[in-house]
Amino acid sequence: MASGGPPFTLGVESHDGLAALVRAIRAEEDGKDLRKDLAKNMRDALKPGAAQAKSSIMAMVSTGRQAQPALRSAIARKIRPEVKLGGRWSGARVKAFKTKNVRGFPNAPKRTNRASGWRHPVYGNRDNWAHQRGKIEWFDRAFRGREGIYKQAVEQAMEDMARRIASRAG
Image (cartoon, rainbow, N blue to C red; front, side, top):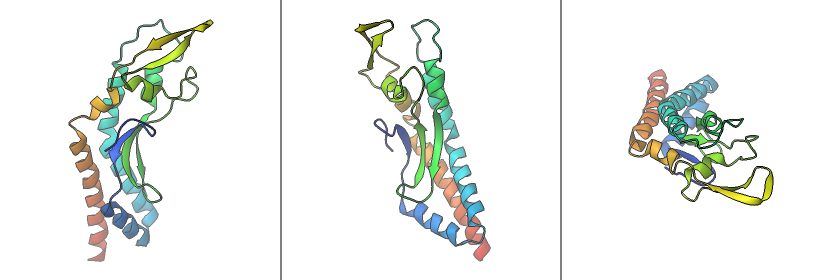
């Protein structure tokens, strides 16, 4: 499990079982469909974690007037489970993607999570800068103590697929 820094994620990293399962899926005649099913099941296993992270950022206090686009909801929209099977990295994770085109603040998920906060110029005055802090560790706290539950759910999806492939051979 990893958090902070680019990419801003929390997930189940690649291991030998997943690589072996992906190889077995490729060997099947309908491997493409099996692969899609596995990825969907692994994403579904992580959806509760993504929902918890979205809830956590939406609970961040807003001290400013209503500005468009809304920062918290923009960050929440960019949080989703991601699954990659094969390639340089294989695994499942919940990721907070960059918020492009939101107030010129693409690193909003990362910056609002860290204790040191972020600096930005005061609107209409380039010489003055403001320092802001978000909800410290909102992403990390959403998963704290539940990492094992999500890892087990992803591994269960992998086991189910392995059983499905094994039942065809036997």
